[in-house]
Length: 493
Image 1 (tube, rainbow, N blue to C red):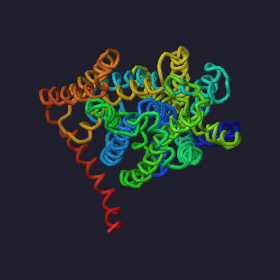
Image 2 (cartoon, rainbow, N blue to C red; image 1 turned 90 degrees about the horizontal axis):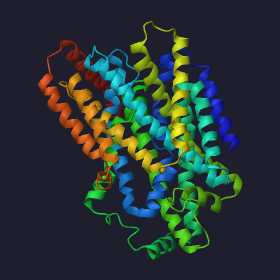
Image 3 (tube, helix red, strand yellow; image 1 turned 90 degrees about the vertical axis):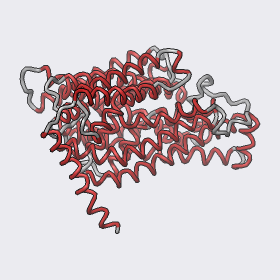
């Protein structure tokens, strides 16, 4: 574990020496290679919920919960296919925007800055919950793995992540994500493979699961509404700032295709590994009734417990480091986006003077620290499960930013009033729906996403006025995407 921690800090220090201004700190100078962007997006997306939250849900609820993974995989593919190349092109065309809020302001020519401010506030609110989920996962991790207190684990994970993010910025977060993504990949294949061997092979494993519950291996036991609700997680991809910012950092729009193939291949195998881990856990505990999960209530420790049972402590240490990798990769990415929201989208608007490059980077690092402290205070109480916290934040971003990003990239008539009204409607719906009994019937992202689209389109049609500048930028963005993809299509032929 110490080897892993030292490696992450070393990458952070390496990136620190290559970071000179705010564009480097927030977007790595738009120089990410396809493989780095793909693994970075995947690792920053698949947080502790992939190795803890999702296996726990599958362990308790059966294979029906896999609709979450199915919806996410489809959503990720659509995001890489349609959003990534267009967003990479349009953010550069539209005043070289380096954050989601600044892109929306520049794309829609909002002179009031209201759209940028509201976007920045939404990012800070929902990411505070998201970062908090990572710290909760860190606390549970240390509690389960080492018998230490939840609070100590939370502070260790949070402290190391904040350190390498403070110094390394986006470049440090991206390259640590690559190392962490590869570690997660290896662990999520290794644990279920060894687990199936320990439970007597595939046939014996399936039989043991059926003895626990004959319906545990069915995808269709929970009803149509519940299945749609679970699969609707895929809608969230279009609005996750910490994921789509990787699209903006690609070297060219055309490289999104190679990145998509790498990223979706990685995702398919890791998600299958998480599903298999949960099912193997059910079989193993059925065959070994004396074994008890550390977190018996939510079963979010099933991956951690199996790792320690199945492997030699030294090997288990690296497998468990994959859980830390999942947690820390996501937290670091989210802290960078929060930092950019504070400095690029809020401070620069309200500041009277233009700060020097070094001062802006310093303010960015202070933003990382502030958000981490607030998230740590929320996580200290440990009032919710990892999956619960992630679900709420995921829905918040998906419903507020998802439709707005799609419409801004593919619909010329979106207006400032339409985008702003839709975002507020989506975010408000998630808050109201997600904190009421309605969330038990349908995941709050579904009504939030739909309401955002309806409100944004109606208001835009009512307020649209032709703008030659917007039309010219829209055409240029589309042209650059096609120009970047043309050589690759010719080479494939």
